[in-house]
Length: 103
Image (cartoon, rainbow, N blue to C red; front, top):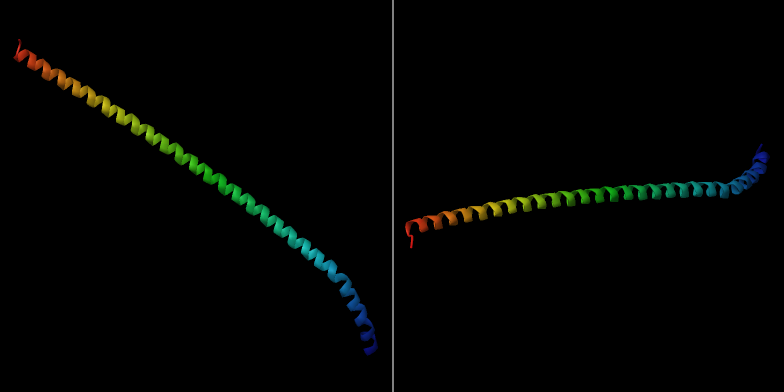
């Protein structure tokens, strides 16, 4: 029995040495595939995040322009009303002064 173990030991060692590079190559290939898949997923995630960021930026820009346009419209409305009120008061004051002091 001892003799069989000694004869099988080199055979098992030889088989293990033969299969070892194949096993390493297979594990290396699997590791490379996992790395490539991870890099691809990270790129897709980054692209999605970039697209979302750009969408948010464009939305904020649009809202800002809308607010600016509304403020401009309100400001012009106030200016127009103020000008009209000024001219109405000026006209009324000058009309009254002309009626009081006709020359």
